[in-house]
Image (cartoon, each protein chain N blue to C red):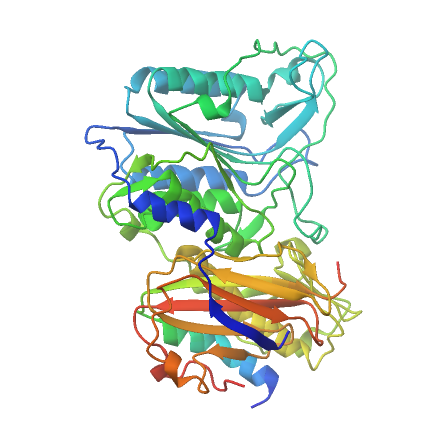
Length: 36
Length: 491
């Protein structure tokens, strides 16, 4: 599976996996490099 | 960032979590007969068009609806032209007259804030902050259409004196910049610059009372004093992130201990990570004064959270603007809508290969027609995931601050306050790959570990490209998710 294919699969997989489950989610955004 | 350098759990608590934890140890004050009132003000329509906003009325309507669902006895709604200085004053005075000691008034303001030099007679302060109403103009009669911080403080002080609790929510800003000084052109901020000439507003006399002296007033601000508040797209509407999170808090999302009340600590513990999830951590709400005891703010009506209406699927699709590039590269991607209006976009892909998040800044570089699919698909997943995180967040933060990390830097991550034992931890680099950390098949002893027993402290090193925005995702679950084989490959 290529990177784009795997990335495309990510959202439906997450939706399916988390459906009906009691969860807490933390998303930590980490900006790297020299951009603005 | 590729290498999980350390894997240990520390005993270092983030402030909000420590406060929430201590709140759980203290009994809440009974408020059996306490009534809830609301005054929600939202202003999109300002004089002329250059200062118009898009999401302030949406915010005020949402807060009002959440107050209804929470069982408010009366909610006064004042939007645009109806939200004059006179109308707000009358509405406030009437609500304060109706409220008895122990009742709560939620007063929310969404619109522009401003800042102006204090007059020479006010030796106690250099600047005055203001809430600007729809017909505000910087000279003449229009100068009366603003509420100064001293005036607002006098209102809150009067409520405090009467023993009426007030939660004042300010979804506006007065000065400053963004956390990482990044945002795309076209993003609207809730601050207006002005200089008052021929002022017709009389300043209230100074008071010796400080915010910390108010026993019954809680001030909820969208950002610290030196930061800006952007309008962002949430569930298909332009919104202020604070008002969205505050509304969900009133619907029960912040009631962490399930006692039917939202305390100050619970409110802070919910809105900070929820807002972070909605705006790429570009704003951090403040709750003042933060008392060293649990203060119940609002008693919820049973079933409030169940009244939540899930957003439609279309609103959770990623909106992508393509600037000078070929849209055919992304036209077949599910969960992605290509838009021509950049002000409606979540991401902007430019012909120079940069991909920019509208408030987060540059998230990927050197992206061509082949690699854009991976980048955009990651963000499509992230948009859905961030929405889930905003509904059920867990406090997580970067100990080194919300900055851009250079090659060689260590990135320290701390996650605390989980109530579920199972952990799924993975990283999403800028290019759409997935780096899986937990569960780790090489560490079978972690399989039965209760990850909620202590805060998690991980350190990573920024060691190789691609650079841009990485997203560390921690999912704590009641049930073990690993049997469902969530991700197609762990490496």
